[in-house]
Length: 492
Image 1 (cartoon, rainbow, N blue to C red):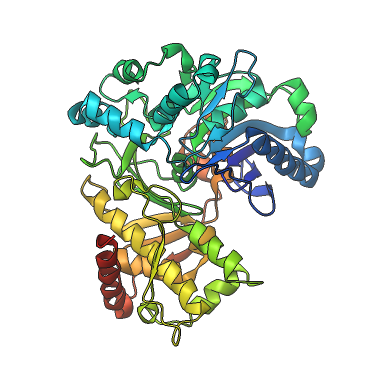
Image 2 (cartoon, rainbow, N blue to C red):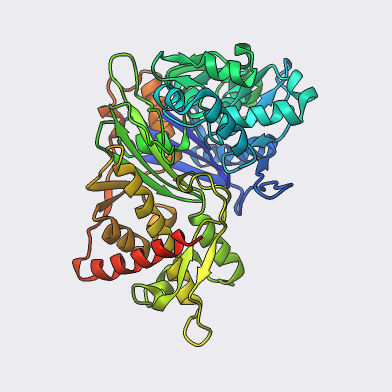
C-alpha cells in the first residue's frame, strides 16, 4: 500500500507519497515555489485565503501522481498535517465565510487575557493547562465582537486541517488534539470546557464532532478524486497540527522525547505524561497524537514566531542572489559572537514566551566599519538559537529537560552554524532524520487506517542522517554571547 501525506503550512503546501512497507518516499512536491500570501490589513494581523491552500494542495498532489504514474492507484490512505491554531468558519452550505485568521495573528491577545482574568488563573491553568491566550477560541471571540453578522452565519468553526479534510471528504469533523490546540479542551474533565464556551458566549454546536487523530474521518469524494487524479474512496485516516505531527514524524511519542523545528517559526515540542503547566503560560500543553484514556500523552510546546522568517527576510533584502546554502557557508566564516553584532529575532508578531508581547526584531551593536552581510547572517542564526535556549530554560521549569533533540533535515537545521550554536548553548545532542511533515502525516495515515499493526512498524525507513554534539572548545564563547543577548532582551 502507498500512503499520501499532506502538510499544510503557512508558506507552502507539501505532499509526499511513501511505500508503506519500506517507508521509502516515492514522490514529493510542494507549491508554491516561493511563499503563499499572508494578508496583514493591520499590524499584528495575519490571514490567508483558504482557496490558496486548496489550489496549492492540488498542484502538489498532481505533481506527485505524475511522478508515480499508475502506482498512484495503490494509494490507500491520506494523512493531514496543518498549521496550528488557525480559525476557519463555514456556513451550513460549507462555504467559507472569511479568510482564515492564522496562527501568527495576534489580534485576539486581549480576549485571551480577559478570559484568563475572568475565569481565573487557577481554573485556566488547572483545567485548560494554558491561558486562552491568542488561540483559536480567542480568535473566534474577536469575530463575534467585530463581525457579528458574519458570526451569526457560522455553522461550524474548524482548524485549517479540518477544512482540508472537509474539502477531501465532504465531512466536517475535528480531532481531540485539535480541540486542545484551540484551547477548547478541559484536561481535568476530558471534554470541551463548558466554562470557556459560556464565557465567550459560544454555542457548543459551533464545534465539530471530535475523533482520535488516528481514525478514519471520511472517504475521498468521487468529484475530488477526479480533480486530484486519485482513486475515489481513499480514507482520510490521520490529522494533526504541524508540531504534534512533526513529533510523530520523528518517532517522538513517549515521555522525555523531544522534537524541534525551525521553519517560519521555531518550536521545541516535548512529550510528557504529567499534567504540568507554566504559571505564566509562556509554553503550552496540548493532547499529543497518541493520547488516549489508557495512556496520558501530552505535548509541551514552545513556539517562537520569529525564527526562519528572519533568515528569509535577510535573504530577500540583503542576500541578493545568494541561496540559503550560500548564506550558511558565508556565516561559517565569522567567529562565534559575530564580532559584537546581536539580533533579537522577534519580528513576526506577539511572542508567547515573552508574555504575548510584540517587541519587534532588534539589531544592536552594528558597526559600519566592521560588520558585513556575513556578520548579519551569522548573528541572525545565533539570535535564533539563543531564542531556543531562552525558551528551553522555561520548558525545564515544567519538566522538559532534554539531552537529545530530534529534528528533520530541513530549514534552519540545514545550517551547520545553527546546529552548532544550538547544541553548544543548550548542551544537547542534535539528531537529524530523513523526514518531514508530509512524510510524517503519511506514516500517521498508515497507523490510522490500520495498515500498521503497531506504531513501531510505521517507522521503517526513518534514519539518522547527521549528529551534532556540543563543541566544548566553543561552548564558553556561545554562553558568553547568549548572556549578552539575554541582557539586551531584558532591556526591551
